[in-house]
Image (cartoon, helix red, strand yellow):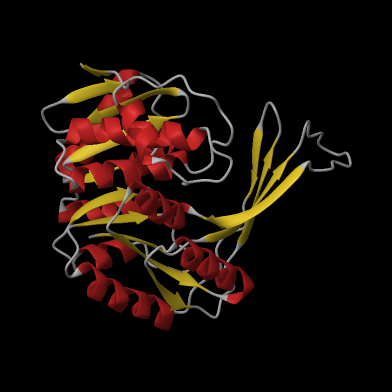
Length: 304
């Protein structure tokens, strides 16, 4: 069982336009609502890939109710920690050329709700084979929160987090961490202008405890490292419909493939395929396992 956990879900509005003009009246040709946010995207992706998995998340207010209904409709196994803070609403604006995100920050969670989440995680992760922890922390949450979770499980961990909260987890030797290039720079406290600077920062996380470090960089190649190995993974050419959730599907694909017994490099290949499949879908994380399998065979990996 894989457990996907995080504190920052979103009830997502997706508006599709022929063209979108800033400062003008724009009328959408399509409007959709769906569960999203990094933790929910990871949970949905794992479910569509075939599980077994369970999502652990906070939920509150009308948005939280809508998310719970959608997960129930899909048959996604989940546990919700009730929050007095309403779940945020975020908006994606898509036209033929661009994707624009309007992001509401998650509201602060009282310490009692944080403690309830930690207790729920300890119960759910006690028998997990792998955990995926993802998403930023709401304001007021201690930066060692994810470390508090990791010490309560013996499962391998895939972490899609950044900054101080990532640094706090490295003493627990997570299996894989997955910030993007800009987030990695913020985590190590310096700009990463060259490949040499990028690779040095990746090795810093490896030396501090991360078994594998995977760094995304938008449309550019992905890089992955262990203490002894360094790889470049070339991006797939794939139609772009909605890029939202691609990083979350990458993490979910890696986790799912790892849990099925694939070696790390092959699991990363599978994660890249999951991200590519997500890129071609309007709603995030609604993956098709057959498409992902086919795409994974096309992913090119180069050892550096």
